[in-house]
Amino acid sequence: MTITQDDFALRADLAVEPCARVAVIGPSGAGKSTLLGAVAGFVPATQGRIIWAGKTISDQGPAARPISVLFQDNNLFPHLSAFDNVALGLRPSLRLSVAERAQVTAALARVGLEGFGARRPAQLSGGQQSRVALARVVLQGKPLVLLDEPFSALGPALKVEMLQLVADICAETGATLLMVTHDISDARAVAEQTILVADGMAEGPFDTAHLLDNPPAALRAYLG
Ligand SMILES: Nc1ncnc2c1ncn2[C@@H]1O[C@H](COP(=O)(O)OP(=O)(O)OP(=O)(O)O)[C@@H](O)[C@H]1O
Image (cartoon, rainbow, N blue to C red; front, side, top):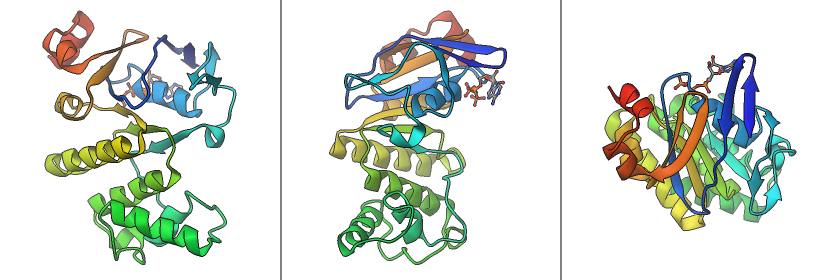
């Protein structure tokens, strides 16, 4: 497919296996966020299409796609409790059945936030706020999870811990993970495959270790 934003164009012709964990790396401004945005439906594909499990999804709006996205800003509502922020992933009206409330509580527990449901985002640490956003992803249970550097504001150790938690959750649910990262060590730690975005093209997925040990010219320049 081709994705165009004003005078920027990115070509992508690639296939990702179900349950794969795939990093998306490349120079700043190369189009990593644009690629994820096209998959999620926030950026239109001007040519070609996106197929998931045999079905074309590029003609669907973002909400209809089988996708959860974790953003850099966590996308939390400041006036809502952690519980309600998670519950929004299930019911925008926030009118939940008893069973649905139990699901929200279980999702909070899965990300290590048992007992934190009543707190608003401002009453939580940065890492805990990321966990709230992740609990929403757990609850939605979508088969494709997209990360656009959601943990970059956290310290390095916490970032790796959060990425590992996401990877574990995806393994449990059988979800496919696509994650943009600027940190090669994140790609090595979490993603066995990597898509390289450079020079107007998204290529791969390649075996992460092999790609990073034998970088092509575009990647060598970026790695320095
Ligand atoms: N809303 C927009 N309208 C027009 N052009 C845009 C828009 N958003 C991004 N671009 C352009 O598209 C190109 C790719 O941007 P994108 O954010 O996808 O890169 P990136 O690889 O994610 O960069 P970074 O690593 O710096 O976040 C850039 O040249 C950028 O200026």
